[in-house]
Image (tube, rainbow, N blue to C red; front, side, top):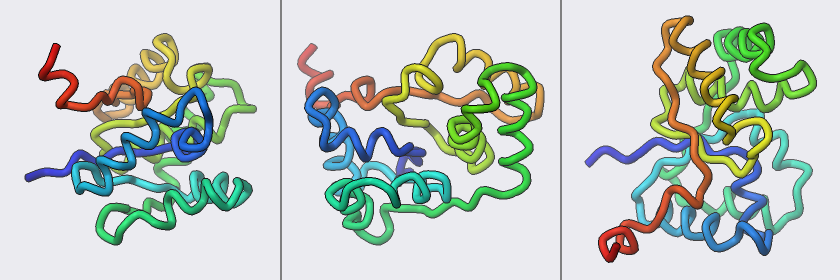
Length: 158
């Protein structure tokens, strides 16, 4: 069975400790622990997590081996991130967010998961990212919040 490869940005890890986002964030990581998802973790996410509280860092550090794929930010991802900036999908100050989307795209992630509604999980931004992706020969990305990656058992009861 193919595990869904999910690029997870820093906000989802931090969301495990946030009252507003903890239920869905922790539910997602519970499914990771059950082997349903492969977490793609980039250099950028690790860099951002290095400044977070220990309890947030523990979330990714305690994921079992085989459930995390480390992804390096290479020149291809940097180039794509700069294309997002050039196309004005994001401003220059948001290069970190552009890197998250770019590295996930280059790595062929099935899904990007984020709580960043301003710069990533945002309809107009998603359209912009995907416009650049298609123009550059990549596939369009699915970008969701953990709330949208619901529990399958819940969906069956609808």
